Amino acid sequence: MIEVKNLTKVFQVKKKGHGIFGSLLYPKYKPFKAVDNVSFTVKKGEILGLLGPNGAGKTTIIKIISGLLQPTSGSAFIDGKLAENQQEKIGLVLGSTMIYNRITGYDNLEYYAKLYGIKNYDSRIKTLCKQLSIKNWLNEFVENYSNGMKMKLTLARALLHNPDVLLLDEPTLGLDIKISEEIRDKILALRKTILLTTHYIEETKKLSSRIIILKNGKIVNTIKNPKRIDIKGVILNEY
Image (cartoon, rainbow, N blue to C red; front, side, top):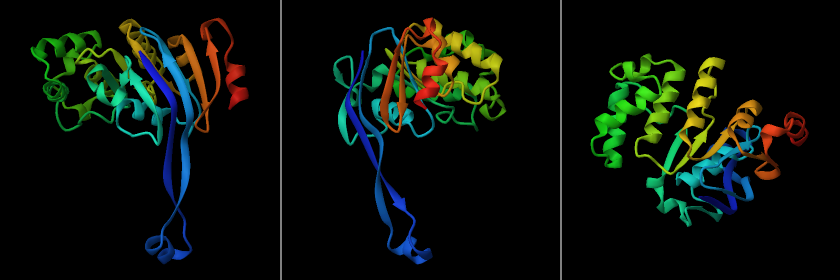
């Protein structure tokens, strides 16, 4: 369902110049390779975990597949077609940054439902939010939501158009243990093709059927059947 071939992304990072005028008037840049010739596939119905430290390239890969970034080289495919042309098949979660705080939860979802061209969106919104246990908060301003509720609303937004593929970037980052477990259970129950990034070893072990370990933009290991082995030592050695 997802295929990534020889994906590379190079950013031009500003170098610090000599003095304030050197930095402002004559800026210099150096290349930074965030993703370095990465290839992998995700089968239909599989949950693949991307695990790695900060700067490993996890979020960059998610953004390229979702179409938010263009690769320097290589390609990403959804169901055999270029991912950038398959946006209607993708649901994206990038933390809680894709929702608006100064309007209600319902208004957020109504806005995105209209963008997706969803008919009968009212029933779709209420069904999703009931499943995610935030239906009673739909008419409240999002700025009054807890972090866990914001993440659930973000997940509802990503599921509105019933996508074939979910791209989840750190879906439980900063949440308490109880809410994190609740969201993980919801993710498992979706039974969709999912690419998941996380810092948490136990999270990726619970959710993923395979784990790819990234470091400095490269794949350094792939772990099959992570639920059957003690992966902590393997991962710590790679870090």
